[in-house]
Image (cartoon, rainbow, N blue to C red; front, side):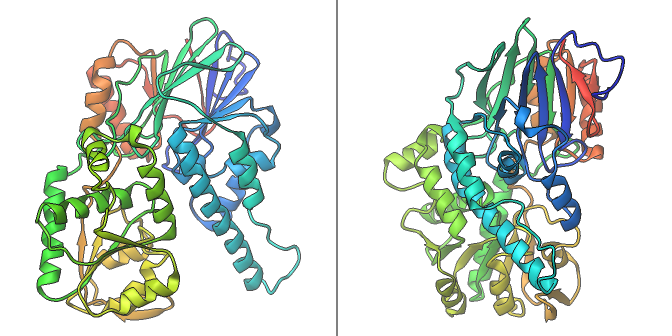
Length: 472
């Protein structure tokens, strides 16, 4: 069903899927209930530059008419286009958990800096030809977003517009992440999962039970696969580190700054405290990750029991006195050139930008060293080329001898897998009217859809961009 479908009778509220439909980027869904128009997430579309700029600079609805935005969490593909929405005239409240609010202040400032630098780079490439390329948004736009953010506690209903109320529930994905449960006039209900966490990961509180609803909008990122048990992945991490240290080398771990970096720090910190790996210098080479770590430690209410206890004991949850955070680029370079073995966690996760590149430049041809990839590596990225069985690799405009050991550990994902989905959703069979699977490539979403139908869910679909589902 589409918004202009003549068969669409407005008996109840509707949801239109404008982003992260049959893809895993640009999360954005519009709930219309009476006169209220509530946006669920406002994520940045990430892809080819020209297409991304076009998608992110335009909205398929009037931004000025949006009543409010409910933000599930602070990953850029879920919140990163809020400044564009404000730039287009949205001036209403942006509801988020307190931890997400604090992370938005970090993530969106960093994103604005990237947008400004990208526009400047394009203008240089074009020899400053008119018309100049303008940034998608700038720091003042971010400041306006932050002024509109309203922090909301978990598990308490709040009215977002006349006849529309909602509550946040723990999603267990990253700090502050939340599911959204909405109740509209007439008793119609909607549950939007955002991104769900795994049942087995440490550090954060685990995912709350998913509320039954007339319509359940659920992510499906890993709907067709099951992650390796986290204990096995942890063992492989320690083994790779010890193997590298035994030959006098350095370990480099590219990681995304929010979520993955904190999880890796936690495991390395614990490994040193528990004697699984020796106490050697450990560096987190990312100003953004340093800022995010500060937010983690300021929100103990989001931590699991072990994390709270470590924080209370003064050990710290993200490195304590074991880890050194590097902010200045000059310190990053000096650290990379030191001869002694060390562990460095650096941005970015797919090795296409960030400080990991200068570490690779210095050590890619040192067979004593190891690069441990802890994230999915998309086709065409430097990280994917590191995984290929070739003697050389091209990055920074030249070919390099690829003599480092490369280890890929894909069991650290913070996303629910197929087994998690079935455990979370299974109890809801017969209690949910319609299921719409989003935030997954079509293959992953269709695989999960088939499994849910086998469990007894009657109406399960994978919407395309612009499709509509009616509540009730």
